[in-house]
Length: 363
Image (cartoon, rainbow, N blue to C red; front, side, top):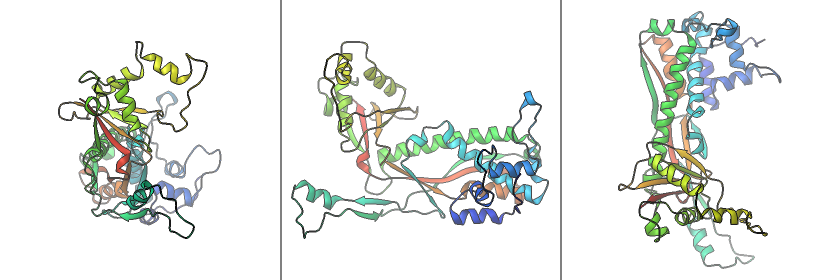
């Protein structure tokens, strides 16, 4: 049973002020009991007799979108239906969550990311001078970037008459929202890859570019990733770890051939795992850690050569998200009865530690 909550559009303003979603605000107002199968938002849907999903085998048919328009209170639930579907689809089948170190919500459309300036500390540390008892420790300073992070709108606009949208089944509209969210996530991934390569406009214009044959393994066959070049590429991240690699079809196949060879070079893996000798080889520094391989068809070649985007996702990319941006347009659709239903998220991306990103070019 849901708690008696007066649903008004002011609740969205309250949620924005707190930097949380409408669903989170409802949870604060009506906490879900342990063992309950419905969230606070879902209980409100049930209270207003709005069925969002058809279950044919049980005889349940989803309501039409016009069910949201029965009362002024039920209308308030519609923007969160759109926003919730968008949020879920942005992460459900996308590689985006594997590329983001942290997400920062903001209540405006301008943000300057914060970075750690430890150049002085590293300079002193490189001299290997011990700090005496009365001396100051080398300082790492937190500073704001010179240029603001660019915020873009990711999503699509559905053009249809107000009446057509209202007469759709809710789960059919949900399918369109999910597909739009998946495309928005792909667009955001493309932006992340661009920032890894070209920077975010704050003196971090490019990740370290390494060439497999020229820089890592002169004996390698041209245009082919060798085992040595791959391992040296991972080592170049130290003290970071390359735990994520994004590649196109050609790049992904080359990495898989390295990881799963069918010739004598497989003996190296056996030795490292202690399978062919009596003593194990241990690497406590995790110089070669588990790598998450991600496929993206939009990873473009660089100078005509296959490129692999490597990153330590713990320190690489910060996502900046404007709170409430995903519900504002849906609310306008209800209020103004327009013919355009906009489904979007306002977001931007910034580099955190430039050294946590490197690109391997298979030359």
